[in-house]
Amino acid sequence: MAASPKPRKIIHVDMDMFYAAVELRDRPELRGKPLVVGGRPDSRSVATTANYEARKFGIHSGMSCAMARRLCPHCLFIPPDFRKYRRVSERIHAIFHEYTDLVESVSLDEAYLDVTRNKKNEASATRLAREIKRSIFAATGLTASAGVASTLFVAKIASDARKPNGLCVVRPEQVMDFIRPLPVLKIPGIGRVTNARLQRLGIRTVADLEQRSLPFLEEHFGKFGRYLFDIARGIDERPVTPWRERLSYGAEETFASDIVKKGPLLEFLRECSQRVFSELHEEGKLARTVTLKVKYSDFQLISRRCTRDNFHSSPEEVYGAACALLARTEAGTRPVRLAGIALSNFEPVRREKEMAVAPLFKEVKSD
Image (cartoon, rainbow, N blue to C red):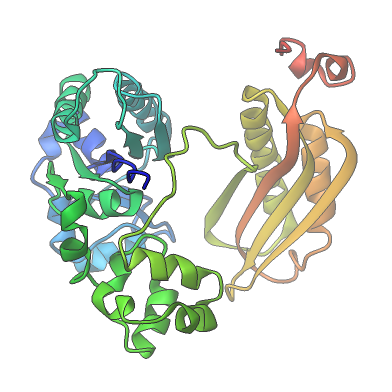
């Protein structure tokens, strides 16, 4: 009889209130005060991150800044500086790669590391997690929380269990005791809508979910039912995926006030086209598909898309496509709350294509 494979050793690292922590590190005079990284409280912007002092008032990420101000009138609001956060993130991810190349970046401040085999030849994932946390603090002055487990989803839940600056280790034999009491909303992939459906079915905890059969869950949730069935039994065989190719590059904005006329929208789309094209260019890629996203003042969201046989070779071409797509909407007659552009259906620039594209690509080198 074949021996069972040894459990994997997964570390999930999640930076503590990352954007706010970076700002507080750079502006120590603000420490101890409730702080939101986001737009102005008199705008429609949302909170990107709130520090722990602000969270005591019920403020959380995704909340409108206006609501945050109502909950805490003396809260401070700082506009986000994503370029700065990206630089810090790159330093943190460089530290991850000192331990293993099996790093799956989830966001600027969050990643999974498979340290079953690692560059330090360290058998203990717990010791590695402690060392990684110390290295991050030494390099950036920021704290991170970590979860250690044999699966991705348990490691992720564990990293949140002892925030901030925490470390939670869940050994394979402890998994079921750890997850059974948890509310199902703690399971990665379950949002408010799915949680509400589970609640209506009388499923409130992972223990409740464990009692449901696979046919029952598939009947109510389709293919997602298999995921729920496995997770409730501590089963998660997903690997740490070191790199995923982006399927689209986009930018969008919720405006401070509804835009009624087309003129300001066209100006925004021109700037947006430049932004997304430049980002794609930095990756050495060209796109054939342009997608326009528009949300009207009544929150109706629509999208328009066009795909051409050849690649868009300049920001002006992207802008021209976006203008044509905008003409297929009711913008100009209905107030617009949000707009954005995404580029997709792309591939790396190759030498035979360079001669046909705009001068902006003259410095792009083929592999």
